[in-house]
Length: 91
Length: 238
Image 1: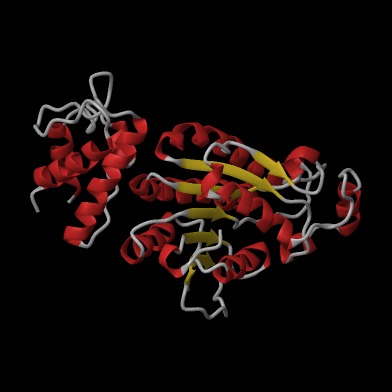
Image 2: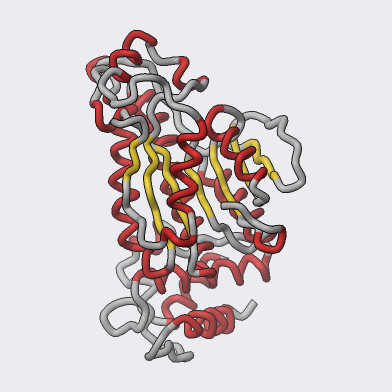
């Protein structure tokens, strides 16, 4: 499974619901924080889409926003790249 | 929420083997909806639109299995009703065991929080959802010996009010329905003399009815009730 493609698919879906500024599909895109185009609920939606796509492809449910993710010094939700790397550690 | 077959809503109701939960399952099935329910025991309710899970709501993995089914079967959830709860024996705070406290909070607080978390993720997709958390008149009456149950329901109330502010941009509302005492197995465990004393504080001093609960829920889950969120609706004139 190509996780980056899964994330990009989720970006496409999230962008459908964003009014003006859209998420860019590249590894440097900021996911959460002041530089992100997502608010907190958009982030929930984005994460749930990724979890769902992973489950569809692998048959296994993976919780991305787990205790480990929240405790890491560098948040997995910083950029697309950090998220991609973090999800790979979960699979 | 009465529906034609083409627009059936998907309900998830916890604690559905008996009492209010069982009543709500039958009520919303009769309205033409799909209902998923759960309890620690089996259900004898047979209906093509009803799926029952024999699960422990205090266990996160059990809750996730229910949502896995809903994602696959329906790809959405319209209404979540967190009804499952335990009402421990009336006992002064100085005698409460850690185990009693832990178990009560697991079922009355932690479990609805996990159900809400997973439901919110699913509701995001459709930009629509209605969350109902069932509380109790005990929160208002602050009855001696009920510190454990009351504090757990107060926690659920505060939680619901906060999440209502987080989720409204996605068309999701969250409200509390707090029934008066209704004849169920749960209320049967309460000291009847103490129950009558508490009921005497209400405008309506008799036991409530199941339909009081469904009427209040119908109001807040209506698609027209999009601006009614973060509210606590006490029944029985509390």
